[in-house]
Length: 150
Image (tube, helix red, strand yellow):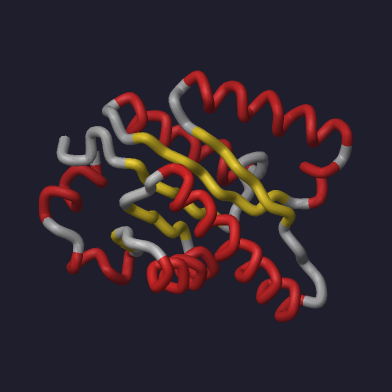
């Protein structure tokens, strides 16, 4: 496939407990993990994830992902006031992603949407990894483009 054994940090501003995380992100990553890609997810979870019931769901999902070889880390999503909250989340994401890249020896970062794409280039200045987003698709080596679609 071309990505076997790669350690990939998948950054998503959508929570893994959210419907989009459940229906699109997780199945996609599980399939690639079965093909040998080693994922670490960094997501931003909404308020419900921080309730006692939400914490149980996070722990349950974390165990389930772990069984598929996927490591999951989450940060709190801040909603209001919009701009300062997003700026705060970006800085928290940079800090956590930098830590994960160093600890897990991540070689590639996949950013899902604009906010994660804001986080990734900054950590690239401090660490050594490849960052690809839809905007940089043409720059991605063809073996990786092909593998990423599988």
